[in-house]
Amino acid sequence: MAHQKNSNQCPMESILGQIMGPWTPYILWLLDNEKTLRFGELSARMPDISAKMLTDRLRKLEASGLVHRDYRPTVPPTVSYSLTKRGKELHGVLQGLNEVALRWDVEDRAQEANRSSGSGIAAAE
Amino acid sequence: MAHQKNSNQCPMESILGQIMGPWTPYILWLLDNEKTLRFGELSARMPDISAKMLTDRLRKLEASGLVHRDYRPTVPPTVSYSLTKRGKELHGVLQGLNEVALRWDVEDRAQEANRSSGSGIAAAE
DNA sequence: GCAAGTAGTTACCTTTAGGTAAGTAAAGGA
DNA sequence: TCCTTTACTTACCTAAAGGTAACTACTTGC
View (cartoon, each protein chain N blue to C red):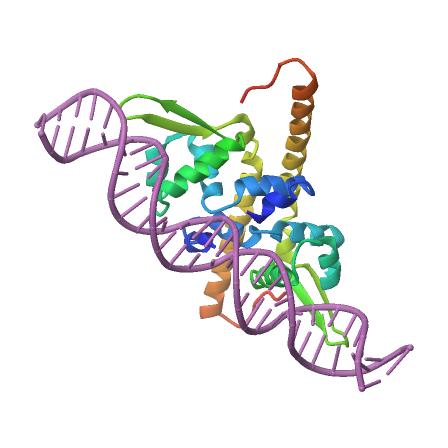
């Protein structure tokens, strides 16, 4: 990703390089809510993600120290994932992001309903 | 981007699709701090971004209603950018993100200094 | 008449991200 | 004997993202 290059400039770019990217925030969100999930459970909660992608994201999150991987060599193997201490520190940010997202979502729906049925009044900018 | 697909599932994914991507958070950050910047000023603050990229990012931010574009047809033209009301609502999140980023940055530097000079003590997990 | 200056656009090319599909280990059950 | 299960890995292919470089408009100043 192009971000990795300027992690030196701005620490925020560095963190964004770690949590951004397809599915990554969603994985973090799920682990934040459910504490511990096995590979298959994560997979089931994200039906559209391929095993390759999921593995890839988890490996990267592990490499940046946000997610902990617990591998038990049973047969078949049992692998579960959870947030590390550092991963948990994202809770507030994820929460804040979610609040704004929810608010905008409500606004957009209201806007749309207003447009199709009501008077021409709309909030500009 | 792969995110656009599941904006229906989770509003957070939608917002991330808008603010993620190379340079985008940095642009937001600059506009949040400096209120209004001309194209050339943004360009000067990000020496590594190409005109094409910058235009592209700004167009997308404008399309999602986070950035306002003010075009004055002087010669040569004067174009300045600022955050919209909605764009300004990201202030808290960007701030929170920055705090965590700064903290981790300090920790990582301390860790590294510790590794090269000190005893073998390190925070595990 | 020519260069400069702003804010782009356009064309072309390369790189990379991501998708699909198949393969793997190892033990237990039918 | 072979299928099942889990958690991947590997190989291959395609679509899209991003880089570079050249071109545009229009007027002022030399």
